[in-house]
Amino acid sequence: MKAPKAFGFLVAGGLFGGGLAISGMTDPARVIGFLDVFGKWDPALLFVMAGAVGIYGLGMFLLRKAASDTNALQSLSCARLKLPTVGPSSIDRQLVIGAAIFGVGWGLGGFCPGPALANLGAFRLEAFVFVPAMAIGMLLAQQFFGADR
Amino acid sequence: MDHYTYLHALIGGLLIGFASLIATLLSGKVPGISGVFGRLLVPSTPDKVWRLVFLLGLIGGAALSFSLWDSAALFRPLRPLWIMAVAGLLVGFGTRLGGGCTSGHGVCGVGMGAKDSIVATFIFVAVAMVTVLVYNRVIL
Image (tube, rainbow over all chains, first blue to last red; front, side, top):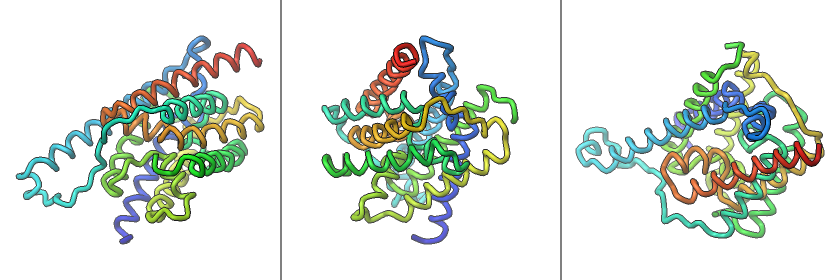
């Protein structure tokens, strides 16, 4: 990988991690506060998702439009623009069971993968327990069901 | 920046969405954290470098924000460590079986209007809410 592209990934990762921290999603009490709808509910996570889904959805919409517009292709020379495709949705048993198992773990710990990794940056013990366990869980799933789901 | 408000939540969310957009453009893939990290653990994965650089950036960006702002550094662990270990196992297994986490399904998939991601997000949020209810009301 060429250096400018690697730098791009580093910046993207930095913005992602900064976004997680600034939005308070690295604080398990805030995440569990959102999930605790029958207790003292904290809607913060909704604002995070609204911002993230909104900008990603809008960006992808515009990029796809640019990629399909031949004039834009020529003028912006983005003929090599490679975008992931939204394939035929496969809502199968693995998706449903996997999402449910993830939900149990998320509710138990208040960590999803991004915030768990981000908290390694603050040397928090919870992250150093959670992340290796998560890696083992991933390896098990990938061993039994493949990595390309 | 030191007193947390919902504006922080919104700004952080915009950063997460924008970062995901850059990573999508550069990699040509959906950059969900569970997939980026999970495939890094598979020896045969051909594109390990960008995954590693992206995740190191994530950890570094979070560390920088923790040190800059008190509101970002707020960390209130609610569970004993053995629960965190069980939770980690379930999150790792579930996200790879279900093909995504809060970022891959929740942000990118929902953002692109993918039906499977919308279903997965609905399921993991609902199940997590029930889990918190059960943990708070039954276990404690």
